[in-house]
Length: 109
Image (tube, rainbow, N blue to C red; front, side):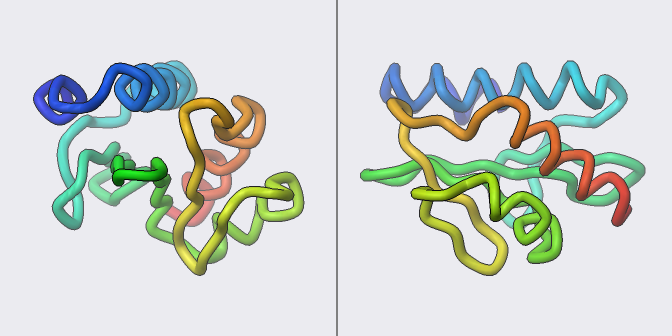
C-alpha cells in the first residue's frame, strides 16, 4: 500500500490514506496487501476492502454487492455500482458509512 499511495497526487493520497487509517483502526488484525490487482485489506484470508485512484475519482471495492447495498441509502449523491463506491478527495465517504461498509463485509466473511 505504501508504494501505491506514494505514486498518487497529494489529495488522492491523503484521501486514501484516511480510508486506510479508518479501516486499520476498525480491523487492526486485517492484513494489507493486494487483491484483484489493487491495494486491499484481507481479513481471515478473504478480501475485505480494496481501493484505487482513477483520473477523476477514487473507488472503494468491498468485494461484495451486498456490502455496497447495505450502505447505499447513506450514500446519496455518490456514484455507486454493483460492487463499487466512487468518491472524490473533496467529497469523501463519511467515516461512519465507511465503518458500516467494513462491518457489513466482515459479517459476510
